[in-house]
Amino acid sequence: SVIPVLLIATLAEGKLRQDQQGVVEDRLLINAPAAAVWNYVVSFPTIDAAPDYWLNKVGLPSPLATTCQGAFVGAARECIFTNGLVFKERVSELTPMGLLTFQIVEQPHDPELLGHLTLHRGQFQLIDNNDGTTTLIGRSWYTLHMRPLWYFDWWTRDITSHVHLRVMENIKTLAEGER
View (cartoon, rainbow, N blue to C red):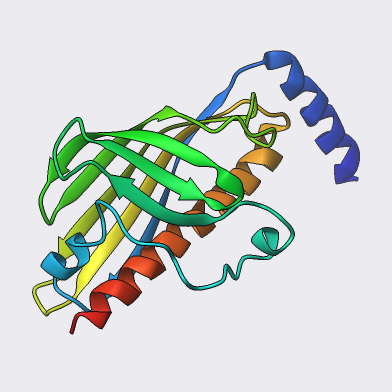
């Protein structure tokens, strides 16, 4: 049976105490030019749509809005979630209509995150498809401190992907609304 093997592997993994680093990447096609998409990448107003991810419906915070000092390297940025959670960020790389990278400088003191997960940086990349559409790519880099890694990494990737897609779908709605 596979269950004893999984149990032994899980127990052995706990003894190793190595954290796991990873990156989550999601892509979304937007029917708008890169200039329209860029207007909502650096910051965006409150997301009006209700979250559709089942974990958000049972209390997991979801992204609401992002504020930013401006479109320049070093600008302070805040990603605001429900329940008053705020991720404080700093713009570290910026190419207008092409790339925004930011470092997470402070995570909220939320019991679901403390000691379990460290988010390091995030990134939005825009690819002009030369047909009036733009591919928006969202990336997040993290270190996972929970065991068993194989189990919690799956959840981390799933939740992070839903955060990306909620933000990216909002950007899509706003950018396509400019047409």
